[in-house]
Image (cartoon, rainbow, N blue to C red; front, side, top):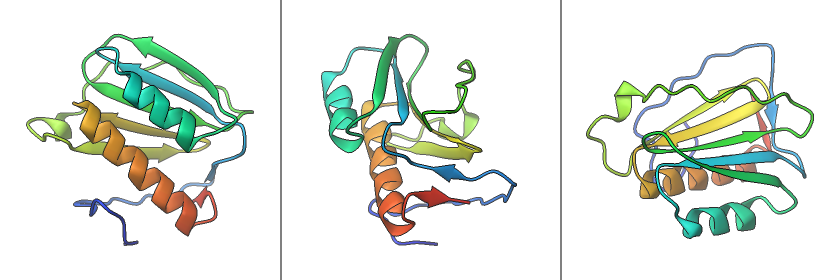
Length: 128
């Protein structure tokens, strides 16, 4: 496991044929249960040159980062059971050309973004 702050508590790796690569103009979608300008500001600093969209709705917070040429799927309205009662926790999933971070609170989403940025620096923007 690669070193990150905050420390990753659980990591599952499944290898597929597709690889996620963070490019210069990603599509970034922030979905939140309430408006939080701090999260949008952090997205704009973390991903300059991005195609950003924000949505209000659902329970919790989610951030989707996709390469500029990928087709972005619809949001699944499920709330991950693994996050129940885990304040400031997050789930970070990479599937193909898309990364998704889900959290029950804004702090959890922020920590998930920090993990993504650290892993991006450590892996030259590529994730198997």
